[in-house]
Image (cartoon, rainbow, N blue to C red; front, side, top):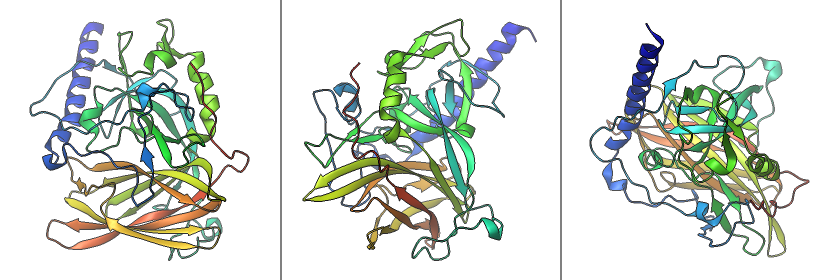
Length: 386
């Protein structure tokens, strides 16, 4: 096969895969097509602002902090040429500027920088010597020895956001606002964390292959490099400034009856409220149906333990106002929420109540995870000015 033929075949393969990954989203229940994403599972009282000025919490222009309505994909398939697939990296990591398709949600994206996390996979039975003490009230869930796993901070192509918003929040990365309002959050649209195995790398001859307001602020086209995009000083400064609030350190995973739950907690900072310290975390959860049976998430049941000695129970319908269906065609749902404690650390664990098509139910375990604060950093930085 000639080089031109191979390139054409690669482009066709990329088109076909992208069409398959994104087209399944269009079949999701349309009654959810115009609902605004919630920012919390429970009544945390957080507000999402639409500031006109630059956000001092994350250092990004105000135009990036607008909430968007969710919309579903119109009927019919759209075939687009996005580039030519590259070989998957079995060893090593993808570099800044690597273009990719998300293997689960199908969106186009670009790698900003990697994170080296510790993955605690409870589907792997540890030796007795590796077992750790359980958090209070965890009812038999055991922590296991973590292994290093690479995740990436990425930008999502804004053209794809409407097509994936039924299955994954596109404004899940949030920051606390400044001290003037202790209950406000700011979201950065189109910023995500992606596991190494979810990256399908490709290359493109376009100088601006990804549409995102931060693309040209963070990345510079350099055709002499591979990948042909390098980090600008603004990206390096933003990463350094916001490292404590972006850092991904621990990932927790557990599977119950073919439903895999992955949890990633993030410390957001501390605020003073009514003469007390309130510590905030966000947590990202992905549910994946690893089997063939169609199921639907109906309820959540959380247990939240604080270092101060309090144990809170939270129950409710669905998650973030949704009761997602997990099928073979649409196996995954991902969302973020927030929790606060009046203590610098704690634990969370719980279950999701899942319903089968015959009306029967079963509980899926949410793996226990720690809520740890950065003791040396009491508040998010004032922000970075471009």
